[in-house]
Image (tube, rainbow, N blue to C red; front, side):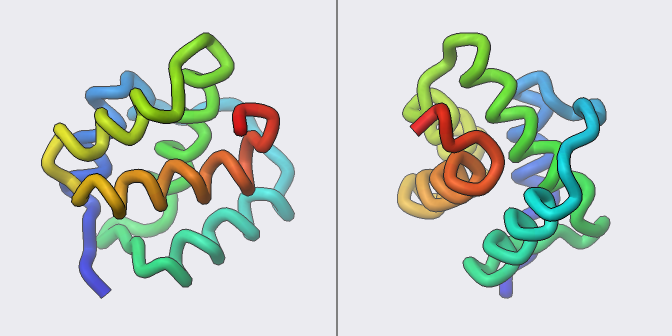
Length: 101
């Protein structure tokens, strides 16, 4: 598995979500983290940055951003290929904010 901490954290900063978001249900977070890990996404500094990024993307979409803009932020930030960025965003939507689908 390739660690993408630097890129995802950079992506989180670009998205403005590097700070911790509101608390969310543990079962939802656990499912998201399990799915992210199963897809091969890791972070050298632990799961916190991945969780904050997922919730942050949901917050951005709740505020009107599109899923495509979230994919572009990760892709253009150099963290991921476009396909992997889309996979990451789709997992976040499915597990953390399905109303944004």
